[in-house]
Image 1 (cartoon, rainbow, N blue to C red):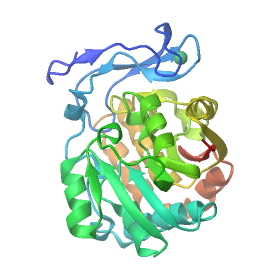
Image 2: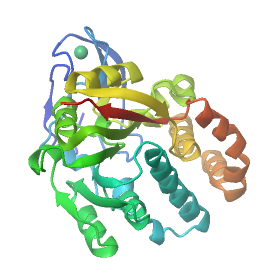
Image 3: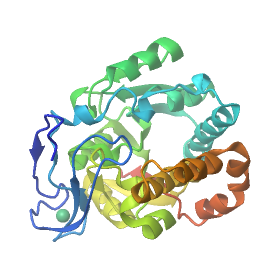
Length: 317
Ligand SMILES: [Zn+2]
């Protein structure tokens, strides 16, 4: 186990309630990248929050983020398929519109800004002054040099930004990757102005895929995902730091998530079979993606897609 990569593992208590007591939920491999190891998801015996335990330490987790890791790769303009470019752009526009329904303009900080696609969309709308925070140096450099963005390099708690500076803070698919979500959420609350808005997306434990595909669901993404808050757990964690949950919405692509889950399920049945490759190629083809729009659009409308976005507001100090 874990013999091909020299990884340090640790067992830590629940970051929300502090209890070390937990029940095992399931074990699984790194289905996305195929890096070695078997990893365990547990449920906190006291508060019910799901987490990975034991887990790679903060010092060693980088071994599980090669530069090919998807969020660090292609800028939208570099996507080869026109359909993918259009669909990724549309995704960014949907994020902007959802935010602008709550706040029209102002200072925005994107935590985990990766190659800067979302910040770029916000900046070019003309309504926003934007900054990013990104620990991956290659991704941060890309955002600065290709897109002319300001990116603070490092972890949110280490970059020391000014108190009450931002109207909006965003964290797209970041919270589940954090070793210590609570200190990061506290930092978000410190950085937001009173009544400022926090927007974040997380894997949706209530999604159709999580329920239908169990351990093969893409949302587990072991070992890079460390916490799996439910919507109730997230609301409690935010309340603790002075943020009030407003509403939930599904904004992010439901079909690309389904393709990943389908790949994990089929590859577990027959890793190198021709028919698995054929089904995946068919489902990934442009006509199938278009044909899937009504079904996955419905999943999105009833908030059962694999990723869910939460909107919360900073209480007055
Ligand atoms: Zn707990």
